[in-house]
Image 1 (cartoon, helix red, strand yellow):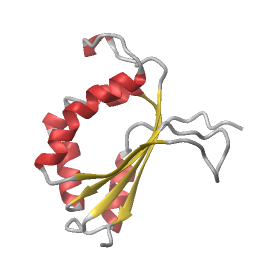
Image 2 (cartoon, rainbow, N blue to C red; image 1 turned 135 degrees about the vertical axis):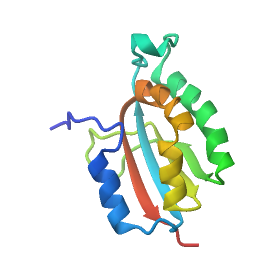
Image 3 (cartoon, rainbow, N blue to C red; image 1 turned 90 degrees about the vertical axis):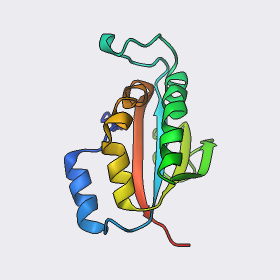
Image 4 (cartoon, helix red, strand yellow; image 1 turned 120 degrees about the vertical axis):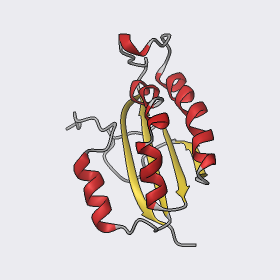
Length: 139
């Protein structure tokens, strides 16, 4: 049975659960798993030209990467997903990447920053579904 729930943004409960498990100064990795819409789903208020989900995500990425760089976050892995080898066959992903964050606090401050929030509409328009999994960063 196909999962009909789509997960695009974290809930306040998920933020709280993460804060309860991780010290703010802990370096972390974030595993991102993305499934793109065929056509981006912009609202009329977004004032964005029509495009594919992949193109909308590229718009988001072009704006997000400089923000990540400015807080010393870095891309550790970035790749197109080819096939699910273990897991539900109907749960497929288009792209997977891992971002290394200097600390959980830096991540939280970045995603809550108003300048970052201004660009997230591209991400929301682009994605059909996603997963964001926080990982322990052991060097």
